[in-house]
Amino acid sequence: MSDATPHAPSEPTLTELADRVWVVRHPWWDVNVTAVEGERGLLLVDTHTSDASFGEVLDVVRRATRAPLVAVVNTHAHLDHVLGNTAARAAGQDVVVTAHEAADYAGHLPRSVAAYAGERAEEARAAVVSPPDHTFSSVSAVDLGDRVVELVHPGRGHTDGDLVARVEDADVLVAGDLVEESGHPVWGADSWPMEWPLSLDLALELVGPATVVVPGHGTPVDRDFVFEQRSAIGVVAETIRDLATRGVPVSEALAAGHWPYPAEHLADAVRRGYEHLPRSQKRLPLI
Image 1 (cartoon, rainbow, N blue to C red):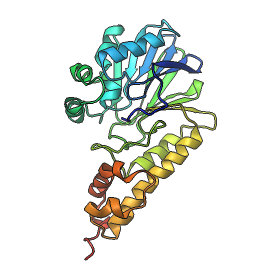
Image 2: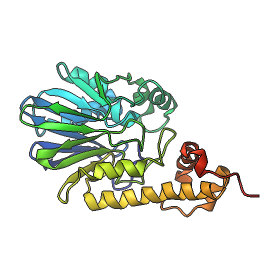
Image 3: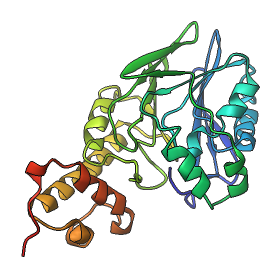
Image 4: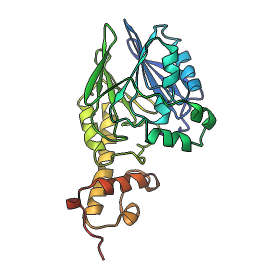
C-alpha cells in the first residue's frame, strides 16, 4: 500500500490502456484497479478498500463496458486492494476470485484492517474480508473466451503473496505493489526486502519495450521505469547485506547506510532484511 500523493486525481479516473483494457485510478490511496474485457465477461484486477469504493470503481468502469463481471484477481492481500471482494461477488454472478496461495487473508490483513485509522477508516473497517475461491503456486490463467489473462507469482517482495497479471495480446502487465509510481516502494511488516529485486527480475522478463505496466498506485509506466526501480530496490537489499556482513547492529543500520529512499521509510526493510539473511552473511556486532 502507498500513501496518496499531491498529483493523485481528485476523483476516480478511467484510462484506456489497450483494446478492452482500462485502469481506474482512485484518489483514496491513489490505487489502481484494472479492468479486462473478454467474450466471456469482465475481469477486475483488485477491488479497492471497501464496498463503497468498489462501487465507485465499478461505476467508472461502466462508462466503458457493460460486460458482466465474472472474475477478480487480487495482486496481494493488503486492505487497499482486496476489501472490495465482497461487493465484487455481489456485483456479478458466480464471480471467481483468484490470488496466490501465500496471500495472507487470515493473518496480516485482519490485523491491518483493525489498526487502520486513516481516510474513510470506519468504512474500511466495516468491510468483510473475503478470501479467494482459487489459489495457485507459480502460474495460473483466467480464460475470458477470446483472450487469456496470465497470472504469475514472480517471488516474494512487497508481500509473500505477490502476483502479476499479464494480458499478452494487449501488451499490458499489472504489477500490483511490486511497482510503485506515485510514491516510493513500501516495505512493511510482511515484506521480503532481500528477495524483492529477484522477483522484479522475473517480472521484467514479461515486459517488452512497448509494454504498459500498471503499478499498484499512480500512473502506468514503462520497462525503463520498472528497471530503474528494481535497481533502487536492489541497492536497498545490498546495503542491508553489506551492513550485516560488516557487523553493524540492526539498531544502527538505518543511520549507517546510504539509501536510495528516505531512511525513515526503511525501518521494516532493514529489520526484515536482517531477519531473513542467513547466519553465514551476518557477523557479530563490531566492538
